[in-house]
Image 1 (cartoon, rainbow, N blue to C red):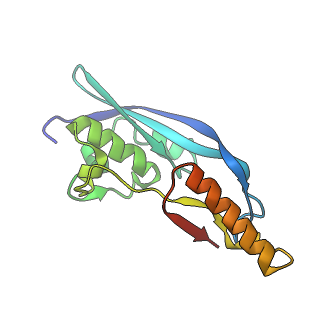
Image 2: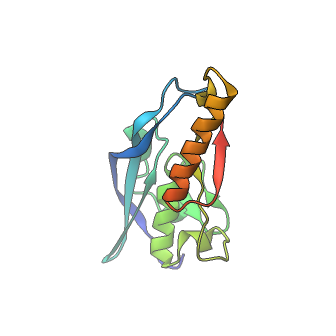
Length: 161
C-alpha cells in the first residue's frame, strides 16, 4: 500500500435474513430453522481526506477485541502478500473488503482468482433431515428439495451432514 490508512471506526451489527425453507438439524444445532442471524462488522479507515470502509462477517468474541484496532495502520492488519495478521483474524472478511476498496481491486483478484464469476450451490439438503421412517420418504424429501433448488436456478447441489 502506498498510502498509509489508519482504522478510525469499528461498527457492529447483526444481519438478519430468512431462508426459503427451514433447515434441519446437524451435529452442531438441533434445528437451524428459517432465520439466520450473522454478526457483521464495518471497518472504516482514513488517509488524509480519503475515507474507505470494508465490511464482512465477524467471529469477534467481544467488541472490545476489535475496537483495539482503532488507530492501527491497516498495513499492520493485512497485506496483499501475507494476508491477515493474527490480531485481524476476528474481522478477516471486513479487512479483505477494506483492502480491496483501498487498492480499488476486487477481493477475488486479491485472493488470486482469475475468473470474474463464482459458481454457487444449493445446500438445503441435509443427511440429518433423513431420519424419516423409510428410504422412500427420504428419497422423496431429497428430490423435493433438489427440485426447489432447480426452480431457483441452481445447477449444483451439496448434501450436508
